[in-house]
Image 1 (cartoon, helix red, strand yellow):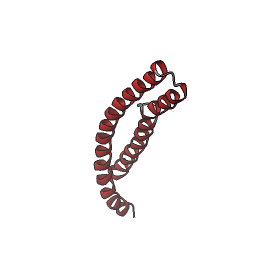
Image 2 (cartoon, rainbow, N blue to C red; image 1 turned 90 degrees about the horizontal axis):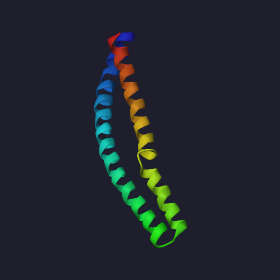
Image 3 (cartoon, rainbow, N blue to C red; image 1 turned 60 degrees about the horizontal axis):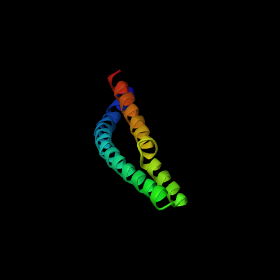
Image 4 (cartoon, one colour; image 1 turned 90 degrees about the vertical axis):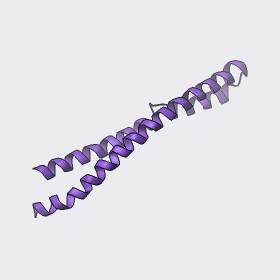
Length: 97
């Protein structure tokens, strides 16, 4: 029975290996893009706050800048990809036992 489970787990391991590699690549591109967008949002927020004197819109822009910075949404995506990678590693250990 155990050998049957190992045979069934092998395609899942292959799929998870390809999926995590592709997701890490997409995450690196998204982190770069989010960094650029965060810089643009901070620049617009500073312009709205210092030049135009609109405090309310500047605060909203700063909140959006935080959400797209590497500390919010991309960090959650990286956590999910790390959990998929850990699942992949666990299945590989199960197969090689």
